[in-house]
Amino acid sequence: MSTPSHVTTGAASGGPGTDVLRIAGLVKRFNGVPALGGVDLAVAPGEVHGLLGANGCGKSTLIKVLAGVHDADEGQVFVLGEQVPMPFGSDGLRARGLSFVHQDLGLADAATVVEHFALDGISSKGAVARIPWAQQRRRVAELLQRFGVAVDPDARIDQLTPVHRAMVAIVRAVASQEQLREEHGGERTPQLLILDEPTVFLPKADVDILFGLVDRLRQQGDSVLFVSHDLDEVLEFCDRVTVLRDGKLAGTREVAGLQRPELVELILGVQIGDVQRPTDDHRARPEVALSVSDLTGEMVDGVDLTIHPGEVVGVTGLAGSGIEEITDLIYGVRAAKHGTVSVAGEVVKHPTPAAMMSRHIVLLPADRKTLGSAPRLTVLENMSLPFLDGDFQGGRLNWKRLRQRAEEATQRLRVKPQDTTALFSSLSGGNQQKALLGKWLDTQPAVMLLAEPTQGVDVGARREIFRLVREAVGAGASVLCATSDYEQLVQLADRVLIFANGQIRGELVGDQITKDALTTAIYAGVAA
Image 1 (tube, one colour):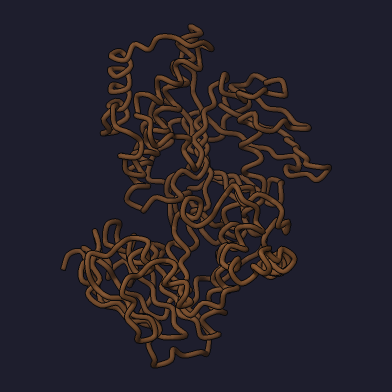
Image 2: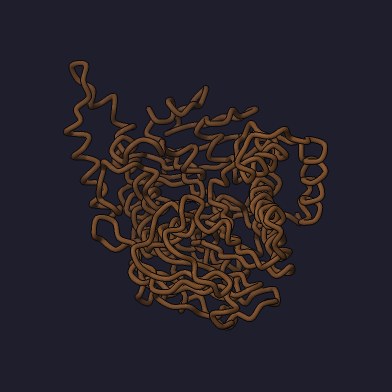
């Protein structure tokens, strides 16, 4: 059983007058179809409140209503006991003490930390003004120091680590609220910070660092609404959790004493069994599908490994162990310092994505938004990219055939909505991942390189992805799955290689692969 590792400073069951935010009967329809069907939610002062649900359950719509992106059709919203008239306007509830940090963080890579904070100061005044840069630097340095964020105010965003970027975004959101309150001469009241999946691309160690910052917010009486698909994070860090299902409230629970299976059932509406090993009756063939010898990169150091047709090989380890770059080195996304990659016994002299694709090797990268897809293109266009050469005839693309293939794939993979003309960015994380996986499965790959394939994906979509991978393996494909998700390895892998300090330090096979055994092996590898 997982329980929160902190003590709540606010009453988690406060009445309407004490809630930082209370939502009653919120309804939002699109073309007459309800995306939210009467949702209730309450967040108490000093509370970290989890918001969960399967992809497409209405979480994003709810956040966008609060942020002013969408106007609700019905319902009531109270902030600190006072009803807020709707619609909220383009700024949403920002003037009422709500601030938002989304998954993309809303930061510009080429701008500095202090420039982001200064921009907020200008926008709050509603006019262009001369910026007192020395004063801004002192203010930003004091803010970062107060929240324990060791970042230079003059550092560019693209120079920061992912966790420091997320921390800067959070401090910026909190500081913006504080500045707004000061300008209006109001006394300090509890703020509500809404974190919309900020941890989805962070390793566990960085998640712990980020939640150290969240703890500081709670200790000063502020609240956090934490949107996530990671059940373990929610059970570890939250006080209460609210679950949406099909746009409606499935329930709200105290996290203390909440069992993981109960939470999963609340999300899916059905019970699922414990984590099970694969029961496929196929066996790996003796020939070699892919091998690497003495592969070395920035983190990976002299790695040898072999993958056979019909097996899933997992690679796992702590952050910085090398699992973050192993698939990129093999695929040629990152240039190796030295070493060789061989496909079906043939050495690939200069691995590049094009060279690997020509040999039926595909890569599903961890960062699907930046590296795995073109968010501004449609679902059809994204799913058609691997087939453009084959469907280019007489100087024209055969869009009829491309569209038919994409529509068949979205139906087979249960991608929602099944509208190939929709922008890819409009799909939820789980549906994006299913579409990308389906695109590569349609190429009938010999080897699939998967990097954190279920990162940011709900429990229902995870099951679908596991099923698709095992079906491909049963048909003779090979899979190399690099992940820090132990449960995923238990359900998928035939073998798991343990990485530490860039090298393979151990191997688990078959029934040896359990969550406890993986944890033990990883820390034993680090100590070796």
